[in-house]
Length: 214
Ligand code: GRF
Image 1 (tube, helix red, strand yellow):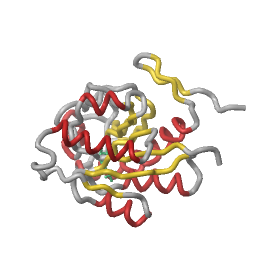
Image 2 (cartoon, protein in one colour):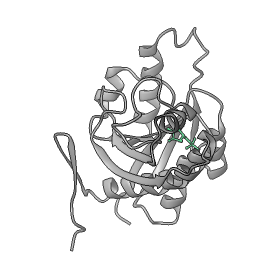
Image 3 (tube, protein in one colour):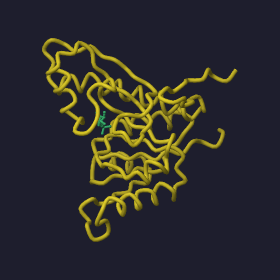
């Protein structure tokens, strides 16, 4: 198999998106491998990495001696990514606001998954159940998820893949989140696979998906 794309995943939660990406790599559905998982907290994602034999790095956000500020924290994160020669960074429920330096270091090769159809219901404060509550409060009939490249504008980067789901009359934030999550897994695996195959081309705000090589 050609030299596989090396992915670094940054996560702070249960890690189901990480799991979907690791499974797709292991089963050969995506020509890539997860080279490292980094988290700011001890979380399910680190546990999943350990179980899969993937280097799992906890950069303790509470260690104010080592990481007194955001730049020192992100320097450590970047060091861990570079040590493993990461080609693509995937944010998967990563709750840290990153420095401009870290984002700039991976311009065009850092993705994020957001549990709504951006640009709606994105931006600061829009994470987890807050997103789904806002969608329900607004009375939307459709929601979904978005995989996008990360830029300095929170949730504002060029969109790679989106998946839509219906909003049901009796939905709660939890039932809506549960309907969207499996779509996130499929959307993220699709986006990473396209990147690994060199089929994504960023043209301003748009991401062109190139045809499969003959
Ligand atoms: C997902 O809902 C994702 O959209 C959001 O955080 C959650 C991560 O879930 N960014 P998991 O940790 O991948 O299970």
